[in-house]
Amino acid sequence: MLNIEIQKLKVKSQEKILLDISFKITKSTALIGESGSGKSLTLKALLNLLPSSLDCEKEINSNFDLDFNSIGFIPQNPFTSLSPMTKINKQFFCKKEKKEEVLKLVDLDTWVLDKFPSQLSGGQIQRVIIAIALSKEIKFLLLDEPTTALDIENRNNIINLVDNLRKDLKILILFVTHDIESVKDICEEIVIIKNGLIIEQGNTKSVLSNPTHDYTKTLINSTFKNKDFRK
Ligand SMILES: Nc1ncnc2c1ncn2[C@@H]1O[C@H](COP(=O)(O)OP(=O)(O)OP(=O)(O)O)[C@@H](O)[C@H]1O
Image (cartoon, rainbow, N blue to C red; front, side, top):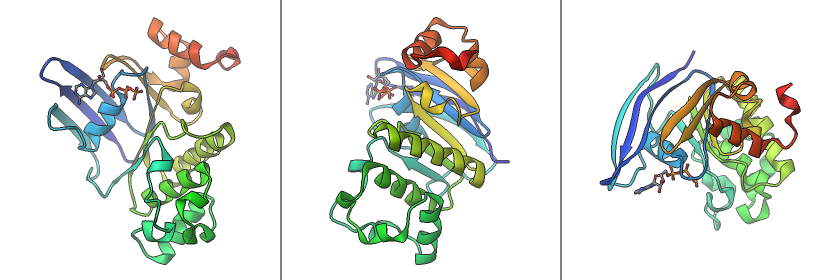
C-alpha cells in the first residue's frame, strides 16, 4: 500500500512563518481551509513550485519515489490548463493505446482527441486533464479545487470520477478545497488548516460528525445548509 508521511512542511517569508504542518496520506486526504489558510502553499511546496522568495523546509517519507513522474496535478481552472491552439491528441505525451486506456478511465471517447479545448465543455476538459495526468502512471494525485469552476452536474461527475479512480487505481489522493461537501464521501482523512497551522485532523466522518474546534464548525456550517449528514 502506498503512503506518504509529511513530517514537516514549513514555508517562511522574510517576515513570518506562512505554513507549518505535518500529516499522512494513506489513501485519500482532504485539505480544507478558508481563503489564505495555506492550501496553495502546501500544493506548491509539494510540487516544488514555490517562488524563490519563500524558504521551504521539507521532511517527507514515502514508500515510493516522490518525483515529477509519480505526481499528477489537477489545477483549479480547467479552461486555462490546456494549450488553446493545440488539438487534445497533441497534448498527451504517450502512445495511442495509452491515450485510449486513460480516456476510458475518465469515461471519454477517443473523438475528443481530434478536438480543440474550446470545442469541449468544462467537465470534458477537466476529464481530459485528469486523463493526461493518469497517462504518466502516477502514484499520487493532487487536486486543487478541481470542481470550483464547474456547474453542479459536472462537479458531481468529477467527484464520482475521482472516487472511482481512488478505488480502481489505488493511487494516493490529496484533494484541496474550501468545500467540505465535495470531499466528505471520497476522502477517508481530513486535515483542517487555518493561518498555515493544522487545527484538526482525522477520519473525515469522525471530524465532521464531532468537530472540536469552532473554526471547523464554522466551515461545516457554511458548507452544509442541510445538516442531515450528521445524524
Ligand atoms: N509569495 C508569497 N509571499 C508572501 N506571502 C505569501 C506568498 N504566497 C502566499 N502568501 C501568503 O501565505 C498565506 C497562505 O496563502 P495560500 O495561497 O496558500 O492560501 P489558500 O489557502 O490557497 O487561499 P485561496 O483559497 O484563497 O487560494 C496567505 O496569507 C498569503 O498571503
